[in-house]
Length: 286
Image 1: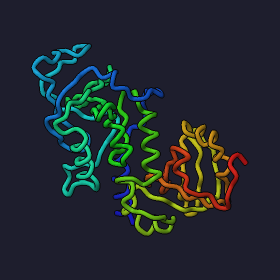
Image 2: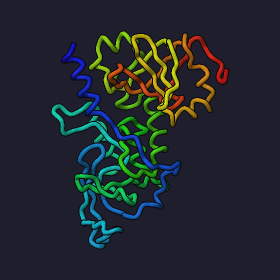
Image 3: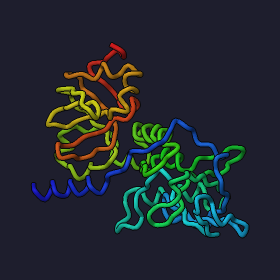
């Protein structure tokens, strides 16, 4: 048992995404993009190389120097790793999707002041590609299709927009979030904890107590499994009329990403769309 919990702790530490950001409720807009380039290589699901052309600007701003060929990391997202052996689940499909979207295409790059490069020197950008008379927001399209998780580091413009797409993808179990379809129970989680850790799951569990804490609302179920609503998301559940339905004694079926904490397994609920069912049935707002 000691080895099992050490393995779970390692998974937790390796998977921690940085959610904090200074994003607003802005929607993506290709007119904010300051650079145009041709994609010459796709490395994986979230990294490309672009050719800015012979007449590219040498300096962007604040002494951010540019080379003709830049490796670009898509801002705000994180796709499964191809570099591991074996590659992570859905890594090849994420790369394939990005290839279909941008390979050898002209793209626009939106750079956020103060968050221009990562620790590897890669240019950080929101990427847009034209399809017909519309611009596709590539970062968001990967999230929407379930090919990317969220990774917010530093200043983000579209954090809330990307989060909305992520909630929708998880709720509908798209892409990598649908590896294990169907509904599982708390007993299933404890029977195979490593199988479901960090995966998209739909869990059915009976709420035994509800606690409002400084960081959000905890819905504790059998064997200390918990659904958790972060404090910044509580208002969305209140606005939908669902919060009053989340009480002890009701059986809740909800989709999300299963994480392990020192207190046990938890599925975070970032939006009402993640809730698939409540029994006994509850009239919203009651």
